[in-house]
Every structure is written in structure tokens, then in C-alpha cells.
Amino acid sequence: MNYKNAYKKLKQYNQLHLLEHYHSLNASGQKSLLAQIDDINFDILDVLNCKEENNNADTVPIEALQIETIRSKEEIYKKTGLETIKKGELALVLLAGGQGTRLGYPGPKGTFNVGITKDLYIFELLIMHTLKVVEEADTWIPFYIMTSDKNHDETKAFFKKHNYFGYNPAYIFFFRQEMVPSVDFGGKVVLEEKGKICMSPNGNGGWFSSLDKAGLLEGILHSNVKWINVFSVDNVLQRIADPVFLGAIIEENYESGGKVVKKVCPEERVGVLCTKNNMPYIVEYYELTEKMRNEKNADGEYAYNYGVTLNYIFPVSKLISIMNEHMPLHVVKKAIPYIDEDGNPVIPSAPNGYKFETLALDMIRFMDNCLPFEVDREKEFAPIKNAAGADSIDTARELLKKNGIEL
Ligand code: UTP
Image (cartoon, rainbow, N blue to C red):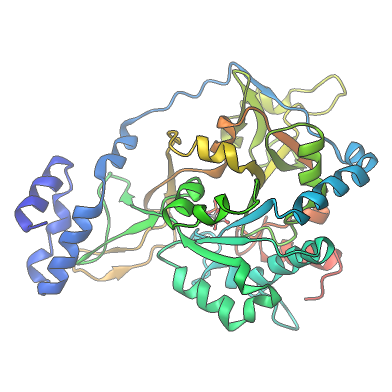
């Protein structure tokens, strides 16, 4: 793309400021900026003008499969789950492409050291949890790791340096998610350097198509894999490849499932698995009205009582059939690095603009049904989102200790 075409393209989207420093760049800087402008699909910015209607009229919470029931059938579920894993029918996808802006840690979140008297990294903990199932099933489980351009090399190098924490490297695959431009609150795409447009990971919702674009779906299709367990990087207590969870989905004839925890209070900031117009749907905490939050069911329990934890199992066949479906794009406030008027880089400490993200939880909408599978939050829910306060390093450390994990 030459300067003239870039100018024309940007004018159409009201983004001409991106060429403001063009003439101060050297030849390779100019070439690189023009290539970035060429690559970006600015249509994504249209979402800023859409006001999605929030109508909860047909939203009904799905009853969770509760811990007591799970315990009473645990042996059956576990047997089925383990047999399925032994047959090589389960693969794992770790979503590690996020930037963890709330934690404020400079490296990939998985490289964060939660240890106190010894090193114990988040990635290490996730691998440790998975190794338990690998041992029990006596088979390696393919472990896919989604990264982004911002942390791919560092993540890969970290695993290599630590010998994959004992996992068989032949079963670990890294792939990158796509990037989209970030904007300031006025809708202007942000320059991170004079010749560099600020790009951010496009959310965790595109993981399956990114897996495909990376050429890894081929391998899955040529294997026995029928199910994918997808999960976040930050819940350091979660059970991954949980045979009881997988077995419950199969035994109870569900198409997919999501691990849920009992909310600590009606206001807790977690999504709730529901149906909307009879299709599975996760209602976000900010979509719950006061009335919905406090609604009780016949047992006297809060109706919207179970929050999702970003640990889902989906069938591969369905994921393939929905790959080209339109996923809703969410506009999220984030702290975005930018350059000031003199061209000096600034790293803001508070949100100063928007990123655009699709979310894995929206995949639920395309499933015929989804089983909310309750897990004990004291044993399986220790997310590290913030540096301090709720869902932080301190709360996670406390829970890890309670569960007998030496720090
Ligand atoms: P979060 O919603 O917590 O986002 O991600 P984040 O970017 O990690 O953190 P904040 O909001 O900036 O503080 C939930 C999970 O989804 C992954 C994260 O790595 C985490 O495992 N994720 C998020 C991606 O893989 N890609 C993304 O673009 C966003």
C-alpha cells in the first residue's frame, strides 16, 4: 500500500491522525506503518456506534448439576470420563492470550510466580493439575496454548526453559490469536509509537478459528479428539481435563458443559448460565436487573445462584459447524499505551480507551444445550485477576495453601 491509498483508506474511517508522524519516520518505518494500515480492517470500529439492546425477557437460569448429585454419581461419571480420555478423545486449550492489565504484571500472566518460599509459576500449577489426570488415564492429553503477538515468544521460551514442567513437549502446541486496533474514548485508533498502531488481542472468543488458522485443526481432525476442554490461565486451582466433568456431560446427554460455582452474594461479578429463547446463554453480571439478582426459586435459593468460571467442554463437531458464525463483539474499557503530543510513549494506569473482544462464553449460544456443573469454589476457584483485593494474588495464595499446595 502506498501513502496515497493509506490516506484514502484512513479518511474514509476518520483516522487520518495515524499518518501524523509519517514524514518523521525513516523509510522502513514508513513502509511498516503503511503495511499496518493495509492489514487492519477498520470496519470493526462500527461497533462503537451500535447500541446492543439488552433484553432479558426470555432469560431463564438453568438448574446446575449440584455437588451433592455429582458426588452420588461420581464413580459412574469418572469411569466414563477416564475411558474417553484414555481413547484420546479429549484435548485441552489454555487461553493465555490476554494482557492481564488488571494484574499489572509485565510478562505473560502464566509466568507469574505465586510461590513464597520457592518458585511456583501459574503455568506450572496448571500443568501440575493436568499431570494428575495424565497419570490416572495413563495417556498424554494434547495441550494447546493460545497466545497473542504480545506474549507468544516469551510464553514459548518460558515453557522451554522450564522443560515444560514435566509435560511431554510433543503434546504441547502454541498458537497465536488475532489482533485488532485499540481506540481512545473518542473512537480514534491509538498510536503506540510514531510508526506503530496499538493492536490488542481480539478477546478469547476466537480461539477455535485461531487454532484453525494456525493449521492445528488438521491434527485434531486426524486424531481421535472429540471434545475440547477450554479454560483460562488465571484460575490456579481449577481442575483441568476433569474426568468427572467430562463424564457427567456424556452420561447426562449434554452437548457441552461449563463449570460453575455458587456465588458468594447476588452481586458477585460473574456470568450466569441461562437459556434465552430456549438456547443456552450466559447472562453477564451487569445485565442482571435488581429483580433478577434477588429472585428465588422454589427451594428458596437465589435463581441466578451459580457463576461461570471459564472452564468449558465443547464437542469438536459442533465447534466446526459454528466456526463461521458471527460472534458478538464486546467493547471493553482498558488501559492502552499511547504517545503524547511530543511522540513520547505513555503507559496509563487507568483505562483510557477501548479494546474490542469476542468472548468464549458467547460460544454457548450456539450449543443445543450446556450443563452447568457445580464445583466447590474453595477447592476449584482461585482466579488471579487483580494485584490486591478480591480475586488477587493474596486470595489465590490463601486458597492454594488451604488446598495443601506448598508455596
Ligand atoms: P480476562 O477477561 O481476565 O482478560 O481473560 P485479561 O486480558 O487476561 O486481563 P485484564 O482484563 O486485562 O486484566 C480471561 C482469560 O481469557 C484469556 C486470558 O489470558 C485469560 O485466560 N484471554 C483474554 C485471551 O486468551 N485472549 C484475549 O484477548 C483476552
